[in-house]
Amino acid sequence: MKTHTATAQSSPNIAFIKYWGNRDSGLRLPVNGSISMNLDGLFTRTSVNFIQALAADKLVINQHEVAGPGLDRVSSILDIVRQAAGFQMKAEVFSENNFPTGAGIASSAAAFAALALASTHAAGLDWSEPAISRLARLGSGSASRSIPAGFVEWKMGMDDQDSYAFSIAPADHWDLADCIAVVNSGPKATGSTEGHALAPSSPLQNARVADTPRRLEICRQAILERNFEALASVIEHDSDIMHAVMMTSRPALFYWKPATLAVMEAVREWRTRGIPAAYTIDAGPNVHVICTRAASNQVAKLLRKIPGVGSVLIAKSGPAARLI
Ligand code: DP6
View: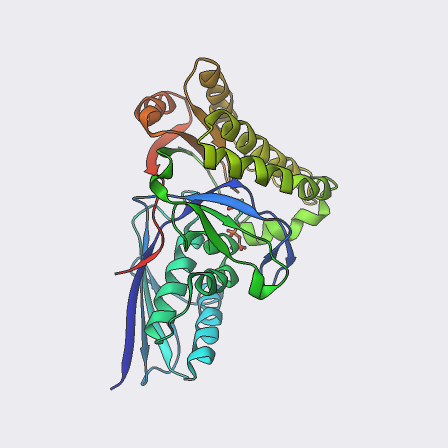
């Protein structure tokens, strides 16, 4: 029996300048460019096996078989790969995360990056990094940023061909870490796909988008110059602006919990005392505290003392997605 197999590993990423809203939701063409850092040590490992005898695609995540919309989202990526490779074989996809799913760490980014890399290789396609980033984008926008190494920019681009991510600087360019303060989240919040669709209903979204090129430029420069003060200021501002849009959408999206705000206030205060730390928050209550690697143990220790912070994960700046 003919089989084609590959396994890939990729990391989630934390956005410094956020992706929030699409101009084409089917193609996941964003309304603005974004910048992120890959997170080392956290990863998704995905194997794709195209098998002649299989009647339908099969998806197993952390040993549990997944059907319905989760499987459909994966199959739509496999369909693109099958079409490019010129065959019809269905696939078995096995995926494992080494970090808690639903802890508010974007598992879809790592998942679709690993799927894009493994499935193209399993199909015998020798695609460039931009082409694989583009394919990952179609599964989950932020996944486009988990393909290249280190510090990454996803350009909004003109069209499907032109919207992909590339590395601004390798992981070892700047010794940064992300201390993720996991806040007790309670019932699951609105997912990001639904959230993107609500973004245009906020009267603040146009202002956010119009100002994004300026924030992207500041963030890019701060990374290239390893200027922590400039980075801290722009990432907190960008996160606050995105949450202002979320809170003023219809229906409104409030992701913060009391402990989220407690961490934000503490981080600002630590910075006035000379601790290089800054917060950024995605579509959930957890706070990503970006700091220098030298400060990460101290920051994690301080975070653990804040009431409502359950656990703290520490991740360094991470590598590109890779085949294993
Ligand atoms: C707030 O990439 O998860 O984390 O394309 O629908 O899968 P889909 O959305 P997703 O959105 C990420 C939103 C964010 C900001 C960011 O990571 O840029």
